[in-house]
Amino acid sequence: MSILVINAGSSSIKYTLFDSATLRVIDHALIEELRDHHHGFELMQVQFQQHGIDITQINAIGHRVVHGGDKFHEPILIDDSVLYEITALIPLAPLHNPANIEGIIAARTIAPNVPNFAIFDTAFHQTIPPHAYRYPLPQNWYETYHVRRYGFHGTSHHYVSIQASRILEKPLDELNLITFHIGNGVSACAIEKGKSIDTSMGMTPLEGLMMGTRCGNIDPSIIAYMVHQSGMSVEEIDTMLNKKSGLFAIAGTNDLRSIIEAKTNGDHHAALALDMFSYRLRKHLGEYMAVLRGVDAIVFTGGIGEHSPLIHEMVCNGLEHFGIEIDSDKNRKGEVQIHTEQSSVALLVIPTDEERQIALYVQNKLKNM
Ligand code: ADP
Image (cartoon, rainbow, N blue to C red):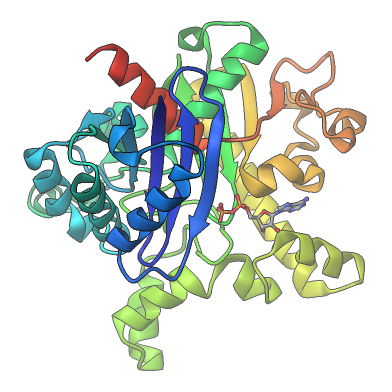
């Protein structure tokens, strides 16, 4: 029997089919250039037959849904009212939730008897207290327009925190962690006794750290200033902040490997991009050290977090007075634990696996059904 994990984009579906008992991966693919999501499920149906699996007979489907607002704080079985709520959240995630919804509708059409679960990127952060999730903005912006911090990458932060607890052999609810998900999107999470108490992304994934093509924190008045000065529309500027900023704006590419190579060849823009990127990560690390008042481990994950010893060093070097000591040999060798024996804070490099975490959530839900 099996669990299917779906990540539906606007014209693509990424899927992973797991054995429901062992969570062994049976099949995994990205299907692109889809006519619609129904078409995607038809292609999957054919594909799964090769493994002797009938999509209408699988145990459950777990759908990644980007925005759960403040309605959803855990994975949930999808019925009509849940689907309605996810649809009502479209204004908060206009680029993502519509595709997620289409994936859910296609799944329900092709396999009507299979239960569907929604797993939200925002859910893990629903434990963040009001003093961290509220913005200092007019009250009715929050009450009427739901303007607050929600946070994203929740499934990833949760997954690596569980792995950190295994590695450190200490229960998760006794651990304080700072987790850095550093891929094209970048976010940090302050985890107190296993629960998210703050995160760097905000109402949208644009806030916080410098990213591949997103700017992260900037002075909000820059937007009004640029509207007036450049004649660009607010929408054009929003696109620039999301798609043409970050590493891409400074180095001319958002591929960190190319940036490191360019820096080695003496490119000043690449060097500046790396300095800015790691400086902002280090600033956030300092913030969360203060927020947590004691940290057991700092975790690096995501494409860059898992593979770039240079970034680990640029972030962690010189923080001995915080009890953080990186072991450059272990770091360069690609070990999981990259701190020295004297370091009072553990430094861990843990590959994320959001699909597996979604399958774990679904497995758990099925057990309790
Ligand atoms: P996404 O957020 O789109 O899932 P990833 O988590 O795959 O992205 O991260 C992509 C980033 O990881 C790119 O900037 C890529 O250059 C970087 N990356 C991947 N492997 C390495 C590596 N060996 N060294 C440095 N950066 C790497």
